[in-house]
Amino acid sequence: MKKAGRKKTIMLAAAVMVGLFLTLNISISEGEGLMDRLLGNFKKEHKPAKPLLPAGVAVKPGFEPGKGPAIGKAQMVQGEALVVHKGESVAYNLKKDIPLFTGDMLVTMEKSRVSVILQDQSVFALAPVSKLVLDKSIYDP
Image 1 (cartoon, rainbow, N blue to C red):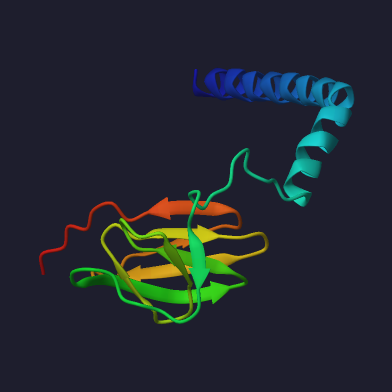
Image 2: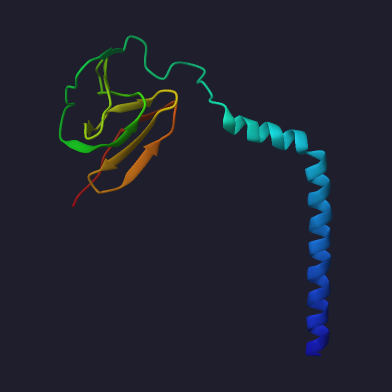
């Protein structure tokens, strides 16, 4: 009985593998154009439909801290990235170790990346052409 059970299992597994192979082989041959297009999308950079910086925001040299206690800092910045404090119409170039505050908006430009470390030691990253607002920070050591 055990041999018959193993034989059925092996036959079933073989049939499933053959079925998968035939299905994948057909879908790959029919979908080569689609696959090439999908892979091609990863190679080109995309631009947002509307600007990431709000209208009227000007980039200012230097850096002025935001309001309240810092909730983290820029751990790594590649390329051009900006920070806009809540309620302000001034953006500052984001650089390593610049403190970040609740309400800050982070914006990365083309071919830019940012890594941020928060007070609880959690880390997040922004890809090129991204925007993130640090709406709220809840950390109680």
